[in-house]
Image (cartoon, rainbow, N blue to C red; front, side):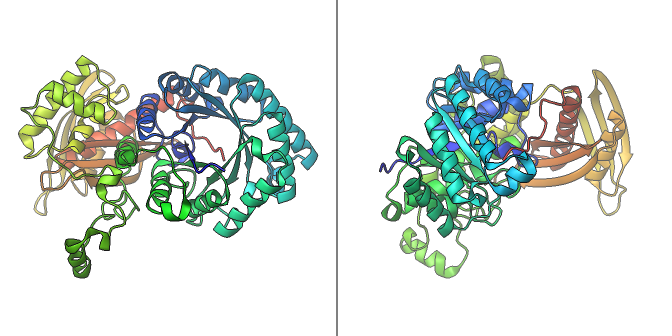
Length: 514
C-alpha cells in the first residue's frame, strides 16, 4: 500500500458553512490560489446546485486552478450532478463528488428510503456521474453510524459503478479513534473490490476528535483526508489541515506517511483565511496560534535558550511563521511591493497596485513600522471589497469620563452625501447609532471583536462585526490604526453585505450540506 496521503481541502465548501465564514466569488478564488500554492491535492470548490453564485464561483476556480483537482459537491440527483459537472468541466483535473446517506436514522427520517432503495440510488448516481466525469468520489453520509455490513454493500456497488474514491465521513463527529480505525480496516478487508478505489475520511470535530479520528483512519489504510484550514466548518468544524499535516510530518517515525503539502505555506494560508472571513486565529490554536511558539514559564525559557527542541517539536519557520519582519514602507517601490504581494497570493493589476501603494504610503505616515500583515489589511480594505452602497467619508468621535460620547459622521449613502451626529453609551455605540440613522436601518449587533494585527501601540486594529436584520446575517471586517474608524468601516462593510444579500438573496445563502 502506498504511503502517500492525498489532501482534500473543503474550506471553500464545508468550511464556508461555518457561521460567519461566507465568502464571495473573488475571495474564494483568492483562497483557492493559495490552496494551490499550499500543495493540496484536491480543492472542493463548492456546491454548485446551491445557488447561481456558487456555481459561478466554482466554475471560475475550476478554470483558474491548474495544479490541483477541483471538485464540485452534488447530491445523488441528476440535476445536481449536471450543475456540478457544468461548473468543474473546464478544470485541468475535474472531480464530481456525490453523496448519499447510509445510516438507518438518516435513511428512515431524512431520505424515507429502504436499504434496497439506497443501494439502487447509489449505483444509479455513480453510474450517471461516471458518464459525465471519469473521476468520481462517492460519500456514504453518516458512515460512522451506518451498519458496517450494509455500508460495505453500498461501497461495493459504488465502486462497481465507477467511483474512484470512497469517502467514509464521520458526519456528526460521533466516532472514537479506535473504532473508526477498525471501521476503515473492516471495509478495506470486506469490500471485495476495495483495491479499485482510494478510501477517504471526512471527520467532524463535535467531540474534539476530528484530527485523531482522521489519523486513526490513515493508520488503518485510508489514503485521502478531507480537511479545512483552521478546522472551520459546520457546527464545531472539521479536522484541521495544519494539525493533520504537521502530525504526520513531526511523527514520520510513527505514521510513515507523507503528503505533497508545502508546510511553509501553512501559516500564510490560515492567515489569508482569517483576513478574508474576519475571524482572528485564536492564540491557543495548535500549530498556528500566537501562543503556539510562545514560552512564559521560566523553566521552559531556560530550556529553550539551551536547545529549542526541549520544548518545541517543530519550528515557526517550518509552518511559514518567520516573525513579523518589516518588509515594506513609504520609500519602497511598486515592484518590491508587487513581488511581496504575489508571494502571498495577491495578483493586482497596475491600477490596483497604484491604489495599494498610495494607501501603504499614507499608512506609513501614521505608523512607525509597516509589517506584511498591515499590507495585507490594506489590500483587503482597498481592493477586495464588494461594491458599496454606503461609504464612510469622515468621522469624528468624542468620549471620556468627563464627556458625553458623541460621533459626527459624513457618509455617502446611495450616491448622496449625508452628515449627522449622535450620542451613545460609549464611543463605538455613538458611531454605530449615527451610522444607523444615516442609512435609515436598525440591524442587531450580534458580535463585535477587535484584534491587533501586529504588536506595538500603533498597531492596526482589525475589527469584525456580525449584524442581523430581517433574519439575514452578515459579517463585516476592516482595519485601521484608529480602532474607532476601523469599527465604523467594519459596521458599514457588514451593512453593504446585508444590502448585497437583499439584491441577490441566493448569492450567499447558507448551505446545510453534510
